[in-house]
View 1 (spheres, one colour):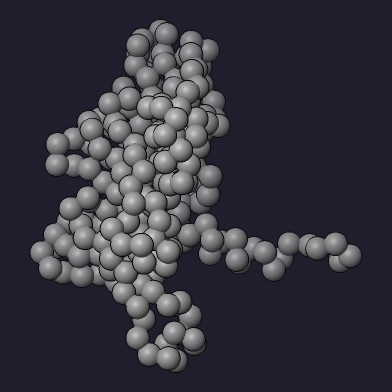
View 2 (cartoon, rainbow, N blue to C red):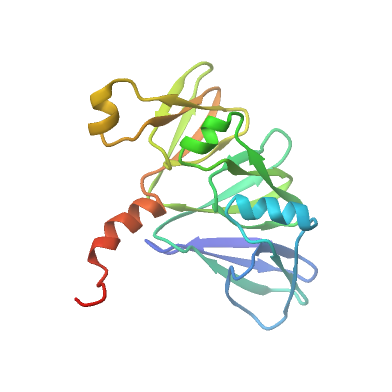
Length: 227
């Protein structure tokens, strides 16, 4: 399989497959494709696994696209301005991603819902109680919001991140929540009650924009009835 990521600020990925090669994506993820590609929709791993994916921001049903001839092409596009990142999954290379980050992957890549280690992380961390885990082997693609910055944390090095700006990180990175200290910081600092703490060793990727932030900026300009 060959691929090409293109487009700015609305990126897309075009995958070129030979006969028998396939990818899977959430239902409705395909934008366009050539004629000799078949589509099959199922829960991809069973109902319970599909239900877990729903809580992690994806659909219950996944669509599998398989090339029936050589040289077939399929294109998937991001839903918001941002970046599409390519992950090479393999032994020792598994990742935890934010809700809804998964775009598509080869069938040898496993997509699972994973609970944050502490309930407080899920309830107040901004990333949700359920995140997405990518493991197995093969190539996967994530759609991320805004511009993405990469950090390589040393053992014991900690990074505090505003809620929602964590894009994805290596599974070996520790993930926890810290309460913002100080009355005035909590109520007037504009950062909320909690910050996400990421501790090395390992790499983390942070995004400069979130879907929620974008929506909050747009909502005041949406006309309402009577105006």
